[in-house]
Length: 413
Image 1: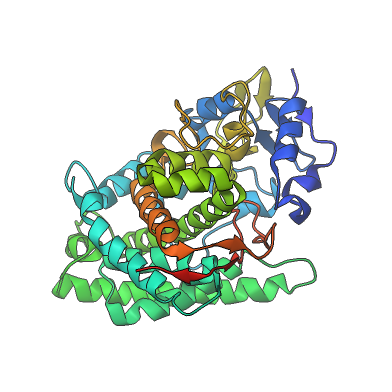
Image 2: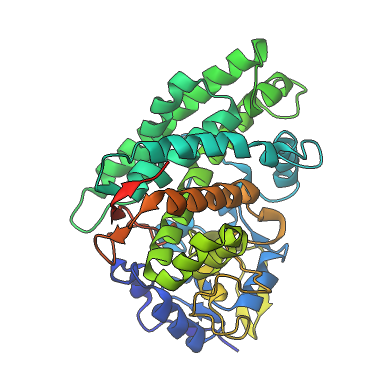
């Protein structure tokens, strides 16, 4: 059986759907579990078929496996000026680099790492909320959600505190390079993003060399002495790993916190309950991840062979996009999927992916969001959305508000 064909494939990434892409995803699911676009790429729309492909070794994360010239810009996107990170590699290289990176980041070698971050995260969040004092309006994205993960990842990597401002500028330029809208000079933004990546790579390479001599605290201090001839990572591989943690982990956490704030303010009954039951934070964050995932789909996979899924053959070399957000709203998997249920049970969403490429920083992102939301809504008095829907980022992959202005009456200690 051949795949269904999207009647209007360009609408899939059309900014007009950014504020509410879910009716479009429902239409794609109706068209079929696998939808072929006119550019030759394939969209996988349903929960169980996404899980099946995500765990199929014939699906490659390496863009070099694509048939040249297929899939458009999203499928062909590369990390220019940096060596390809392990999320864009297949086994065995993927496993080798990921396993080394995980040792100082979590279990089994560092089982208390994430738990022990709680004190630092609470301190950072407290400082950000203290800065709201005296204001009657704040931008949750710029003044809260954006600041937290950058400060946290600098702490984790072992970046000197005085360099955090430089990281912030580079991250902002890289993120903005993905956000060129209609009528804007996308090429100029792309050049600025490439320049920021290059500056970031140079900075990290210099920092890693310094950490070889003076390891100090942080992940780079642990891994830098292990690089070089005969080492477990090359310096370039450690640079790409550090850049991945900074850039990818940062942007997804910004969107998670921003999407959660927006969702709670749209559901005042849930917000009232959350304020009375702060222990609800854990399942609530999981439901936000299902209901408004920060990563909508993953566009850079390639079929290593002809793959038969849902009675459709995806030809070898074809670009494949896994629509995680569509799978999260699949009524064949989740009861009443378009309703926000803060204590939903059996909430095995796809937002951190699955299989060997399961999100490296999932535990940290969860903890950041749980503490941030608990403290935000404990301390901010009378929060109210200034505009709804807010302006969204241009990126169809990493979906979240570009700004989220919030009116407030004050901030409590």
